[in-house]
Length: 424
Image 1: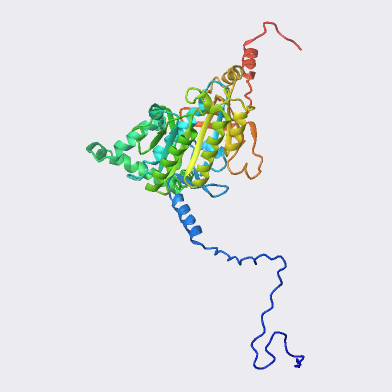
Image 2 (image 1 turned 180 degrees about the horizontal axis):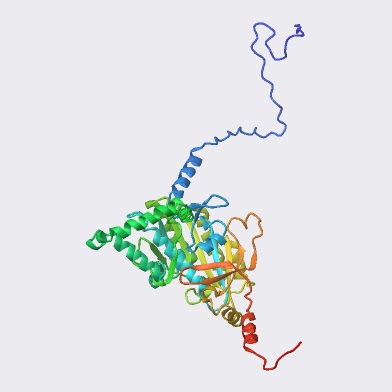
């Protein structure tokens, strides 16, 4: 019989010649195997490092800039006002935008063509470097031939540009006019000394950081030279949505294999339009899995792919099941609502001396990318109006024009003279 001292701890080899006491373990009454010990992953794992490297490469693309809200890569829609309306200064990558349009107008086609033309122009920033690729679904080569060209300015601005280009050349006539050019340089020095051109320098610096991010287009001019097969690909529409998705996926994989930092712009002009799509495509068995598949492509290539589509509301009203499904599946939705004839007559009468201020309709915000998914209420109806000018597609705050008849009344009162003498 052995005794244990009070200072000894249970489990220690108190008796000489015996081995260490067995380690006590908790009793498992359930009869199951003990759970395996999980290893905590390292925060600086190689996968996270690779994703950060890919993100840095994407941000070096001249067609990309970080979002003002979420800092994620963002591309331009082809219109500076529409970029500001989305609050990200563009459309974030991995997101989609649906443009709904009421009436028989086709203003949405202007936005989609500008979206595609923006991608083609950004391919010409650096020689032999392709930064973007456009995938057009359901349209032909004729649609690409009608892409708008760059806005070169008014006639006065074009004349000034020609004069400056002519003066920059070395010729006998330019050397004789060297005195006038010296005086002009002296005026520029005086303006710089007194800070008269600080405002212009600030504007140049602000636009110079993302010089090729956004361009202005002239809808009266065509893009010259036109897009090539390296700039745009066409995917025909069929009643089997899997074939369309397979072709789009093959094009994306091929383009990203050539350049992992390339931006892919997918356009769907006139979605479910009977002139392009079969009536079977409007059935839920086609449109729902088709948009779901496009959404999965956007999530898979969330740093490279963006999607822009349009749908006519006269054929598919907002309260229909098709449009409700599309609104829930797209990341952002806007509604173009042209004015009726009475409102257009009122606006034209109010701005009869200022035709540049005439607006064509309202633009309503239904969903915004990223922000609406996070629960922010971003619905704005009747707050913004649009006008499709030659220079750009402009969006501004909406206010009902008031017809000013005070000048006419004053003119009538001045012209009416009394013939009787009035004595007080």
